[in-house]
Structure formats: structure tokens, C-alpha cells
Length: 266
Image: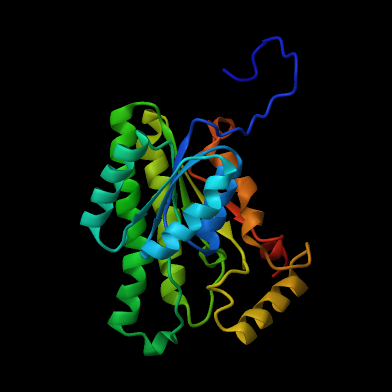
């Protein structure tokens, strides 16, 4: 129990994740790699999922010098069978999963009145269904293991604010916020926590794929956010490390907004 009357003779690193194992999806670049790097820097071993084996291995090689064990696997989260096999492979390699960060996602733009089934379902299959079945499979392990665990969902500011031409993206992220609350309520008795990290605009390869548009959005965010800039992947480290740590043991069903304060000054 933390906070008891133990004699403390030196400062403690209360956010040390040494001995824990975290699965991060969509982890070979962007936000996913940012989450993986932050957790690894805090001492957690990493299970890294992505769709491209070469990119997975490059990401793993960047993390291994941090002194943690890294298991990289090629998993397409739109394929339920691949998720089941990926979790089994991860458990064989690492023995357990203490934390899962369901981050894998895509983005696309389409005016709502032009929305077609392919555009909608392609995004939903990754951003919503992929998260559901990743969390379900890890939850099965956590319940069977009986040691609790932390589930972290990568949300978005679009949970709270409408984004023109991205209604399908907002719908998926909004669904995940509700999913997290349901999981928190259902699996809390097993010691399993589920929370959402909702980033604002973060500068990554994906958000800057169109450099001109990306800069325009980043400049707009910087003008509105009280902290005066767009975000970087390492701005999410603190929230992820906290939620993966035992210090968040009484925190579940919540959404942490990490956006430089933009949502209060929109």
C-alpha cells in the first residue's frame, strides 16, 4: 500500500515502470512510437505492434538502447484473428501484459454529404473495431492472470469538438470514450483500469503529411492554446506513464485532455 507510515530513507521514483510490460499498437511511428518511447524511458518493457515489419524493427532498434526488452510484431488490427495471434505471441515472448495502449488509427477527410461506405468503414475498422478487439483480447489475459492492469485508449479532441470533414473520425473517437467507461465499470472488480488520453493537435508524420495544411493547423492551435504551441509526441509521456504506473490505481473511466489548454480557449 502506498501512502502508509513506512520509513523512507531516500527519494523514490514513484513512476518507475521497471518490471512492467506494455503493448502499444500502431507503435512504429508518430503518437504510437511516442507512447512506446515514453513508457520505455520509465523502464517498461515494450510489445510493439505495427503493420510494416521493417518499420517495426527500426522502431524497436531505437528503443532497445534504453535498456528494455522489446518484442516487435506485425499485426493488422483490422483482422481479429491477427489480434488474437498477436497477443498469444506477445505473451509467449514476454510472459504478461500489464499495460495496453490502443493507439493504432488512421485519419481521412470527406465532407459529410459526400461520405461513402468505403471511406467510413475503412476508418471505423481501424480506429474503433481494432481498439475493441485489442482491448478484449488483452482483457482476457488480464482477467485470467488476476493481477489487474491498465488499459489506455488514444482518443482525440474530436471527442469534444466537431471537426468539419472528419465526422467519421470524431464518431470513432467518441465511441472509444464510451467504450472506456464501459470497460472501466465492467472490469474494475478485476483491478483493471481503463482511461482515455485525448491529445490535441500533435506534430507527427501523419499530421504533417501535407506540410502546408499541417503548418496552418499548427499555427492556428498555437494562436488559441494558452500554452502557445502545438504539441509533440513527448508531451504525452507524462499522462501515459502515470496511467501505466501504480499511482493511477484508483483512477479509471476518465479522459485526460492533453492539448495545451486549447479546449478551454477555443
